[in-house]
Image 1: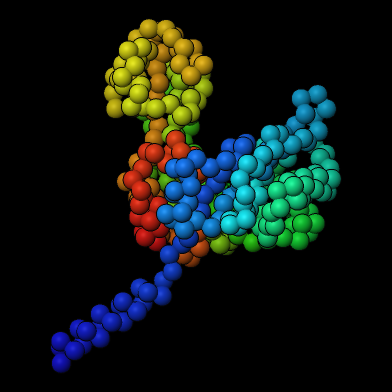
Image 2: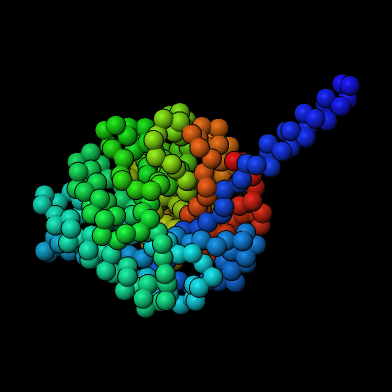
Length: 334
């Protein structure tokens, strides 16, 4: 009798687990020219990726007129018929900080350019995503823009959400979109200290509890990029992306002085950047263990199971830093 009871419980447990659908794997594509390398194609195929979030263009301000202008529109060099494409438009916050922006005109022009790019590349999209790190000072203009954009586009609309916008949503407000994408990265300050500005578990823990109270459905974006912070005399000079840290260890002009810091032994140029003797490079990376830790924490605190996990971003340089099945490992945590 006890044995039979055990098997019934096991069956019910397995049945319960089978009903829980894992999130799908998606990627952001953030380069100006869309052309896949063989490695990128392989990852897309191995993970059965059918949805890509493609940065179409940025919107900034003209330096003289201070009017909104599109920056670096995407150029497609691939046939995208096999993918569901979600155009992503990144809007610089200063656009929304202008005193009297013509919100309706901006929404119309943004939709028009998206339509032009889609038409040229024979892309039909059902969703558009707006990426903007709005603030308390820019929220009124931004929220109005979202309203206008949704009304005029007549498409499903998503928006990126930052951690502080989740925790303080009563102040920052919630955009009128169909769902949000929580950007679970860029948590700290880019500084000369030893903290990782891309991801820090202690910082994330200050926000995780807020996820349970956030009214909008959230999917999650996780980081698979790395960079180095260039430091001179304790001052940050800039970010240096796509530095191969393994090659840096072999470069006679640099010496590794800690797990995350390299010192410039003699002045030199590398990848077109001048490094002065005694400059420091602080490396910031995201390990496989970091990714799984993020997924486990998000799973524990989520109000609802996410429908998809979007990795930022699809680039051979990033992909080469991980084992082949890392993306399956991450979504299995949900």
